[in-house]
Amino acid sequence: MPYPARRIITLTLLGITLSGISILIIDQPLSQYFRQPELLPLWLKARAITNIGLGDPYFMIAILIYIFAKWIRPQLTKWREFGRDFFFSLLGSGFLIHLIKFSFGRQRPHLSEDLNPLIFTPFTTDWNFHSFASGHTQVLFTVATMMSLTLPRWSWLYFSLATALGLTRVIIHDHFLSDFIGGAVVGYVGTITSVYFVHRWQLRSSKQN
Image (tube, rainbow, N blue to C red; front, side, top):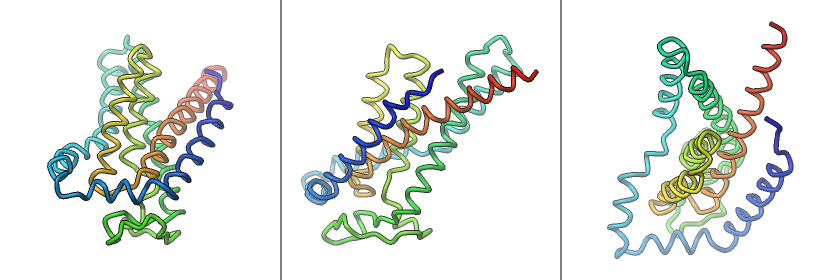
C-alpha cells in the first residue's frame, strides 16, 4: 500500500498543536473537574475498564491469530497477514510511545496536589514521570486502526470505542487530556507506518525469492 505521507504529517502536526493547546488551557481544569466528589461513581467505572488498553493481551491475540492462520488453517492468508501486521503495529507504535515517554518525562496528574500539567523530568525511567503520551490510548488506537484497515465499514465504531476507553485514563487521573491526544496520534501513525514497512519488506522478500 502507498504510504499516506501527507495525511500522516497533517495528523502529526494537528496532534502536536492540540496537545500544546490542551497543556496550556485544558489539562489542569479538566483534571480538576474529574476530581469532584460527586463524580466518584464515574471514576470507579472508568477504573474498572481502563486496563482494556493494556498491550499484553493484544500481543497474545496477534500471535495466536498468526499461528492459527499459518499452521492450523493455512488457507486463511488474510488473517495470517492480519496477525503479522497487528503484532508489528503494536511493537512499532509501542516502541515510539515509550521513546516519547522517556524523552518528555512528564509527571502524572495524580502526583501533584493541584494537578499541575507543567512538571517534566526528561530522560527518566520512573513510571510516575511517563504521563506523555498515554500508552493505553496508543494501544487502543493501534487496535482501532488495524481493524479499520481490515474492516473499514465499521471504522467509526472502532475509533469511537478507542476514544471512549482512552478517555478513562483522563478520568482516573493517570493522564492529562494532552496525553490522550498524543497517544491517539502515536497509535494511528505508528500503525500505518509499521504496516507500510512490513508490507514493503514482504514485497521485497517475495521478489528476491
